[in-house]
Image (cartoon, rainbow, N blue to C red; front, side, top):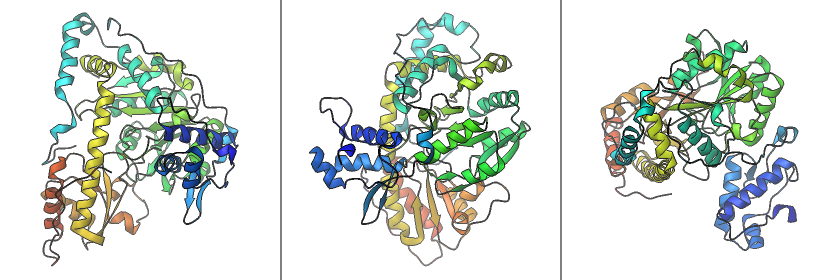
Amino acid sequence: MNSFIPRLSYDAHKPLYIQIYEHMKTEIVSGRLPAGEKLPSLRNMAASLKLSVTTVELAYSQLAVEGYIYSREKSGYYVGNAGDILNLPPVYKAPQLRPQAQKDHSPIENTYADTALFDFVKWKKCLNQVINEFPLQLAREASPEGEEALREQIALHLYMTRGVLCSAQQIVIAAGTQQLLNIIAGFFRQKQIHRIACEDPGYLLRADAFRQQGFQLLPTPLDREGISLSHIQKHRPRAICVSPSNQFPSGIVMPAGKRYALLRYAHENDCIILEDDYASELRYFGRPVPPVKSLDPDAPVLYLGSFSSVLFPSSKISYMVLPQQLMAQRRQILSRYNQTCSKTEQLALALYMEKGLFQTHVKKLRKLYSQKISLAVESLKKAFGKSIRITGRDSGLNMLLEVHLDQSADQLCQKAEEAGLRMVPYKSFCFPGHPAREAEQNTLIFYYHWIPLEQIPQAVNQLAGKWLEGKGLPARPASQGGKTP
């Protein structure tokens, strides 16, 4: 049992449960804890470390979410099948980045709009500082790859919060993901990539962007762990689009073993993994799941991120991190594009991050959204009982509702719109020819995040009035109070 027990530093700034999580993850990745090995129970581990059971449970839960361990009912926790983890080179490297002093910086409309989502006063102060202090910077042409000050802040932020090790030179900024996809298409052509595997169901706007650029798409089904590797291995694409930390729209989190297997496929087949980490900041239970990019800094992973979901929708600031395999073509590809992202907003965001305001804002969002989720789930269950099943609520800006009310998904969405709520049929994110599964036909994507916290019970009651109208099933009043999970 000694190999299970970490040495904890009670004086460290790092929480104890994270120390346990990191120790056990390292033991699993190194092979010292083999697949199938039974782990100490929560109570035994807590007793050995003289900690509370809750602290140990937090560590085990995060390991389970990421696929390093799994639980068996009435049996306990076991080490997961990490597969190809042991065959990859070491993934841990000493950080190369250091904080740098600031240089002379040479949804759609809804009935409800939550004004608590963003502090525009602080954002305005950053904008004013840029205008007042850096007028010469604004008078110059914007850099095709984005402003260096913002790229440095993004590189530091990715290392500190997502474990992604990269330099500012690897980062490219653009006004929205669509512009980035146009640039990525140029890189793919340089590498003679003509076919791209896309998750089915998945984010179809991304797939359509590649289709319009003349690429052949390979719709790839999902299994319980995300994109189907057997389908990938059968068709051998040289580019794969995935959202492993929060697959849209299913909410599936790809476990660690499958992530390493995906990396191995990419290494062996001269393949580029396009990792869309769109909801990386917004995980409400446990720690954010490390992206594939963080597992192997030298892997051919092209990492996509965006600030739109955590700032405000009109801030179309997105970025990508190029793998070393594409850096040689960087200058040639970018020379074909003008920077479309506002230079003023880029510099304002750099200041916003440098001052620590961005991370404070993200923490505020997580707390607020977790409260909204709890209250929305409670209200929906009270209003509809067993007529709905709620999933996909651990991260992101939406949840999934599997509804059984003898109405089509389109009808339910139309009635939701009449109640002032945004819902979209799950099936609308499936490729043509996607096999019709009954559960998917009845599933809706519910964008809860726009609704002010105090208005959620009222909104659910209005929804129940529309959905249950004429059904002889009076809506049960939803709770008027919320709680934080």
